[in-house]
Image 1: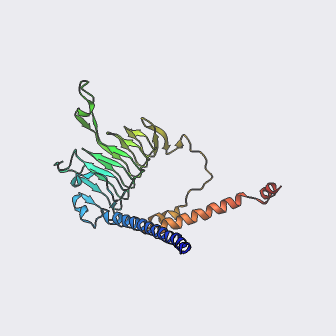
Image 2: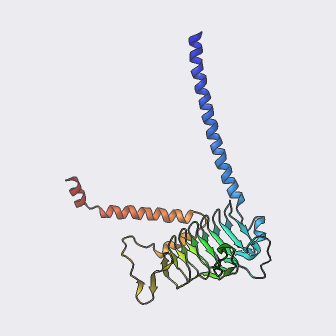
Image 3: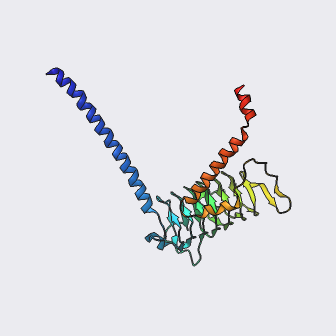
Length: 280
């Protein structure tokens, strides 16, 4: 009797452990699937009630969920097919509920992509062009506190506004800070972590604290200083339409093609002589 009882107890304990493990796995799956459902249905799009609060929320645009701090929506315009990542703050004015006048304050163009955790804080005018991409945690503002009164804490001094303009096609790296008065031309690349203030021409690469021009393009002489030679070929023009395909299909085709080209290039770099030397 005691021997049978001893065998039954380990069997019962093992069964209980398996049941607990399966319960944890089921709970894990349910939590993640539930969170994906919440994220999908929590997005703000032109087909959800939240879009009515904005001055404009274009066709195909989406603001990821969970959102950051968003207020002053009547003075915020977001263009068609612009994607806003999760935890992104976009605000107009000091606090919600203010009357900021007749003009849009924060205007984001078409086909932009704003990285997770980006902050766009507008008080007078922030204009972001079309096809602008930001990395995560970029900060853009058109207002700073002044430092005119030495006897008063800086945070309590009256702020000053200076409009910000970011041209079409710019790329702003992770953690960059765009300060009031900044004007970026077309296709300007901003290095990650840069602190940017001032005017920068089209087709420039800027970086540093404070940011300065690291490289710029001259129509006659090309990039100055010249670009380093690269062995990796640029994507052919005929592949660019793949990036405009709906969903992930175009990106998948392009990724597969690049992977095949890499394999072919590596195979071509290994000659029979190389194999013989390695074997020897």
